[in-house]
Image: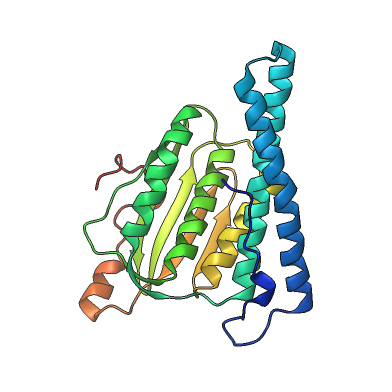
Length: 246
């Protein structure tokens, strides 16, 4: 993940045609200023890692520093995304939602496997056509999975249930792990999920212990027959799904 942020945010125009407020412009400048030294630090830590000239104690310290820097970069990226949601309207079009879901699952599969966590999801037989901003939906889904991963332990499974409702497609990210409390980083992730989905006229619902995050994605109005069918969930909420199938 790069720490570098766009330099031209204060000069951009909001979707309404107005310039960003002075406060938002100042925040954008501040985030960009923070990104520059963080990028240099990431490069320096990476160079130290490649030297192989450190003692075991120094290696542990270097590893801890690298993890904290990566965490800081992730926080900075989420703050930038929240700022973009506040500044600009969503660009919603008719999109096959499964084409948004699959890249997220594929990208997260290996990193989560390294932590001993699996994802279980499947594609419903019905088309998943949503009226969405694909980029914001993807970032919200990624943030939901990252939050679920933070609430999970080794050998846990994160489930993705996809349910068709009248006017909505529900993406339900949930775990069976209990006892872990969300920290401030996790709650920032949830704030990004909510802001990204609400900016598209969607709805977000969340409950903890076990964690369950529901992204209600707007869908075009279906015909009466399709709507009747959609009232029956594909399977009960919270039930495990088979492994990812394309």
